[in-house]
Length: 328
Image (cartoon, rainbow, N blue to C red; front, top):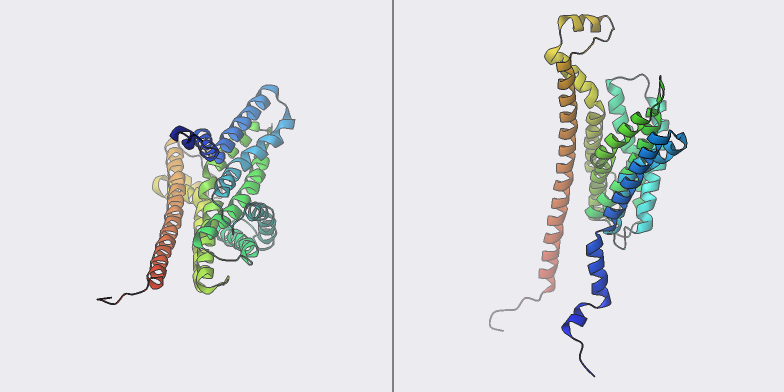
């Protein structure tokens, strides 16, 4: 019987499948590209035809595009613990239960808008997401920092998707009537910022929660978890308050006596073009700084977890290898 040639061996069915996957790219990229193309086409057709029946499609596709892309990206990296079903459950529960719980608590405990409102929103929303994550993770067979980050991010992205849909829907209504442009601008801005918002914050909490559970054998609400929760809530608070902080910084740096007089009388002064540019720069600088701090925290937690795993594996391997005495 003739032996197969090397070329035939190299082109076995599994290898052909791998080549096809490499050529077409990971599925999350195709989903993102396809979804973005469909969203742009829907926006264009709506602008051209004025058909308001397409607006819900614009809101839903635009709000869920980036979060669903992440879930698809994470799906290819799941294991026997973080299954596809658990990942999508985390996304759905994080969105529905998270938004519902946060809405109820915020309406009950938060009154008129103030500086404390931003603190309260951060504390409430991060607490609700932590509770949802705890509910989903309480019966896992094992806990690792990586799994906690993945499951936490899924909860956070689910929350972000439903929240973005709400913001886009509210942006539709203006004193001058329905504004499709406001919807599109809201969707684009929130889509760009989504990866460094709710998904990032809950990923940090998930990594810390699972890291503690890995050492103790089960989920525990320790002082470390509470401390990280407060830090994440602070990042959330600074993110939400960046706009008002930028306004006050602009006034402190460039405010005129007339503007301060109007503010003292409870009236909103008109901003100069230079103040508008300064406000925009300060606002985006605060957002970027907040996002960088969150990303650095997440990367530090990840590196520490990888280093701890490597040390544990080295110790286990050394313990398993028998020690030979000299001369034997």
